[in-house]
Length: 252
Figure (cartoon, rainbow, N blue to C red):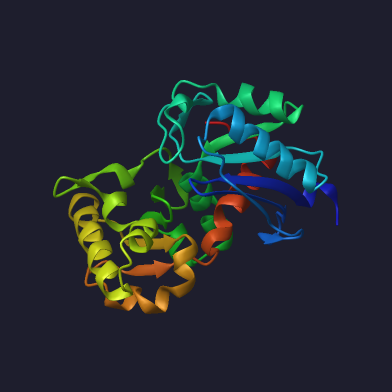
């Protein structure tokens, strides 16, 4: 396999930092996925060291893509969700180039990266019309897709639903924290999707994150009229999208 067909992505989440070598032709991992718990507090320096540790562990010396639970513009973190507030205002390109000892680093929002991967390797629905891609994990990440093109940094998980942030209400972390059944949790997800549907009128919702592995337990319980499609890449999407961003020099 040629080096050009391989990439490396690291997905920084509120609970874990995950990385792997990716076959950019198929979206499959060609190394073991390495996961290290997100340091607490999750400061820029502490997270950057974990990212560097994962890259070293995989013996990777090429370009690296990194996703963050943050809006990223001009390679500066503008928000910080489930990571330390000191990320806000941090030049993330400078941070990771220094930690990794290379200039070929791309940093982008985690849900945007996952959306890019889903467009490339996932369900056909991701490539047609106006689509809202959502990842359910420690928070709720979002990506707006229009005919397969991402409108970046939407961060719908922070939208207020009856006075509560959507991700505090309906993330998979909320399900675990409150020990909700799939039925009770699906009612919360449904409430969030109805509000998104009312405001944005997408052609489809695509739902990802680790909990999408069990989509048969909750997606059929949703009552929103707009089709809800489980993500094909599930929780691989962030790593794959990060690797694609590095290969294509995407740097919002």
